[in-house]
Every structure is written in C-alpha cells, then in structure tokens.
Amino acid sequence: MTFSDYGIATATRLFDSAGMDVAGGTATLRRMLSPWGARRIGERPDWHSDVCADGSPIEFSAAFADDRVQIRALVESLPEVPSTPAAQRSAAGLTQGLIQEFGADGGRLAAVWDLFLPHEDPAGFAMMHAAVFAPTGRPEFKVYLNPEANGTLSGVDRTRAALERVGLADAWAAVSAYAGRGFDLDRIVYFGLDLVEGSEARVKVYFRHYEAVPEELDARMEVAAQHESGLLGDFCRELTGKEGELREQPLVSNLTFTASGGTAPVSATVYVPLWLYADSDRTIERRVSAVMRDLGLPAEQYRTLLDHVARRPLADGRGIHTYASLRVGSARPRVATYWSTELYDRYPSARYQRG
Image (spheres, rainbow, N blue to C red):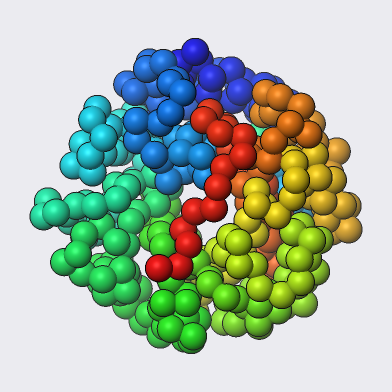
C-alpha cells in the first residue's frame, strides 16, 4: 500500500460520513501527498515525522462544536532523502502548489520563511501542512513551523522575531506572561500560520508544558479574551484517569492571535495527550465519548468517524488516539480528537521528554 492509497481511502470514508464534498476533498489531499504519496509504506519510517507519535506523516482529526463538524488532515511532506535540507525542499514544493492550485495565501509565510527554513545548519522538521474541510466552503490551509530550526536563534528569539514580522510585536507580552514559569517548563514548540488573507487570519504559538497541573494551566489560559476557566481539570482527569501533573507525556496548548484581536490572544486551546494514559484505544474511546456527552457534543458522530479511521479492533493497541483538545469560550466548548494513521506502531512510546 502507498501513502496515497491509505490516505485517500481513509479521507473518502470520513468525508462521505460527514456529508462533505468527497471528490473535492480527496483531490486536495492527493495534492498534499504529492509526489511522495506514491511511495510504498515500509515497516519503519525513513523520516520519523513530527505529525504522529509513531512517526507516521499523516494525521486525521475531527473538531466538534454545536452541530458542526470539521475534518482536518495534517501531513509532513516527506523528503527525498532523510535530511532537513531535503525536507525544506519538499515543504517548499507543497507550499507553492497550495498557493498556485488552491489559492492559499503565502504572504505572511514569506515574511518569516528565512527564520524557520534557514540555509545555515537546519535541524529537525521543516514544516507541516494542514487542510481544514467543512460541509460548506473551500478547504482552508495552515502551516506549522519549527522554532528550533537551527542553533543561530533560540526558539524564544525566533518566535519573537516572527511575531514582529507578521505585525504582532506587541503580542509578545502575552506570550511571555503565559510562560510565567520560564520557557524551559513552558516550552515553545510550534509557530502556526493560517494561509489566508485578512485581519481574522490566525497566528498561533504552541507550548509544551512540563510538570504542569491542569488547573493552574487553566487559570493562565485566562490571558485569552474568550477563555472561560473551570473545565480543564475535569477534562484532563476524565481523559487520562490521572490527577495532577501529566508526567508521562506533557500537556500542549496554544495561544491564538489575530490582527483584529489586538495584543491579547483571542483564544487558547489545550491538547491532552492520550496514547500513554490508557491500555487501549477502546478505553480512550469510552473516555472521549463520556466527555463529549457531558459537554453536549455528538459522541455518536465521533465514534462513527473513529470507525472510519481504525484499521484494527480498538482493544488491540493504543496508538490511534494521540490528543484531544478543548477550547472554551462564550459558546459551547469545542472538542477535537486527533487520530494517528498508525502506519508503524500501535504502541508508540513517549515523545518530547524534557531534556
């Protein structure tokens, strides 16, 4: 089976179940998997992708809010050879294709390109691309960039410089305050950009929180204009079965900024890691379903979509579910679930440990 074989077959089932444009959605995804999607899937990844815990370069997710559902696909365009310079070339080709063929806007990305895709001693991943699909409208694209792109700048300095270049220099005060325990414990790990125009286009700064207590993180998330605290502690406990800090795999969050939102983040989202906190995906499915029911969200639709992703009985591994996210605002909370394609390992180990 090739990467495209797997990705297109899975996306077809998801789009059809969610009532979306199957032909248009799969055409978009096929381009996102080109040309590397024609390769056959091996037993081990040649390039251990940052997309999934087991190194798979394709992830699907679904976001639920009120009666609306979005299907998203995240990919890392695989390089011809396993090196960061080759990954940069592959990412550049996909970016140009999305701009030319689908009308994605690359203006802000161009402004920070040399920061995150440097020529001098590049390291780590180059870029990840995501597409968001909804029952109405065209897909929207976004990218995730690597703050640790090389040793010339620290991740902190690179992120601050990037905010300045996209016209959000004053947002740094909120980022710095949010990482009040220091950037070692609240580590900046991704810089996200919507590839769309306008004052509502989002810029996201992602953090990985080591030794963090969910309730304390919930209180810090009040820096975002729309955040309403009080749910995060229960959300984490119900999903992981653990009290207090999540040491085996740390929490992740983001602050989202827009030009129209001013210097304060317009929203904050937390991502709870799942794959190390249960014996199987069956246990995780039951926990996610219970949380969604408690929040008045469509648990049955989540389970239906999950069935279209899983290639094995849920009890026979714990690698499908990677994260569940929560964004709380004035409306009903939005929950998203993230699913690994699990191409290499159904029992992936911990990643991104401190130090």
